[in-house]
Amino acid sequence: MASEPPATPTRPRKGSAGAGGPRYPGWLALPAVLWYALFFLAPLGILALFSVSERVGFSEVAYNFNLQNFSDLVDPLYGKIFLRTLELAAVGTLLTLLIGFPLAYYIARWGRRKSLLLLLIIVPFWTSMLIRTYAWLILLDPGFATFDVLRWLHLAGENPEVLFTSKAVYIGVVYTYLPLMVLPIYAALERMDWSLVEAAQDLGDGPVTAFRRITLPLAGPGIVAGSLLVFIPMLGEYLNPVILGGDKTIYVGNLIGQQFLDSRDWPFGSAMAMVVIAVMTVVVLLYVRLVSRSQRHAS
Image (cartoon, rainbow, N blue to C red; front, side, top):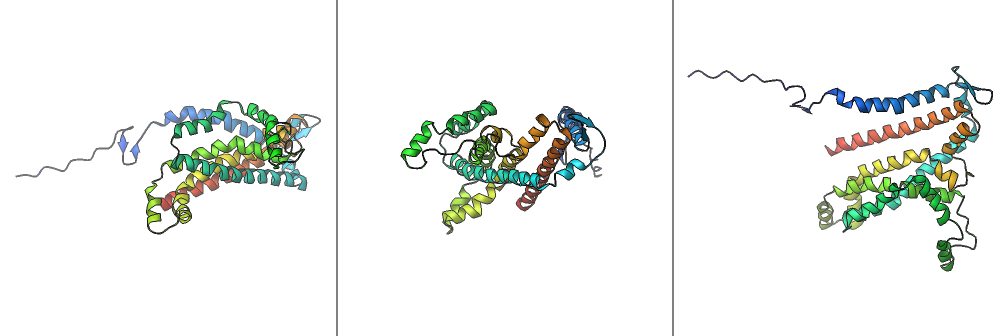
């Protein structure tokens, strides 16, 4: 009996599922690419053009290639401002993590009404950030009822100096960006298999050791993602230093605003913005490298 000829393999049709998964036409990404190019790349290009231009007179701009704006940033005065801004972003991210991780852990592990608790975390986003920041002017006022309670508990003096100081700025940024830290950590912990922690404790690990060896590594991607979501906007923070800090302590965000709005030196302000964008880009690249490394270890 003659054997049947082997079946000829057929090539997957365009748009069908192949070896690498389903393939879709590239034009589906066109709206997103156009939006990205129009509202990000084009303004970024204009900003880069301004950064290598020079100011003429009070507010005129001469489009002559000039790196003097970046050379002026080497001044120790601006170096202190950049370091102060990095300190705000680093310390603010750490404080947000120290507050947000226990909250996310509680919701993921023991929260009986997770939906309600997550809703309470997201609710502040329903209100304008400007309104929420101005609300802290009332809460941090020495005459507010909170300070009366703190004085009664002997936790505050007669005239506590919080408002219009760096303390108020840190309180404002932690409050503003706390949900951006809690949600990624909660998402990572929610996917965790808690039986691994129980197994580690059954094999002799204490709660702290099990947390360090099991929970913390599995929550690592959420911690890194939350830290990135918090650190990057804090580098350009503007509202909290101006409103809660009384614009007394200069950070990069309000310094750039002063250059554009008060000094009318758009080239110098653009150079500052490009430096901040460069720092943000480095942070994002480090994040991508950490994520890819953790994925390789997981596989």
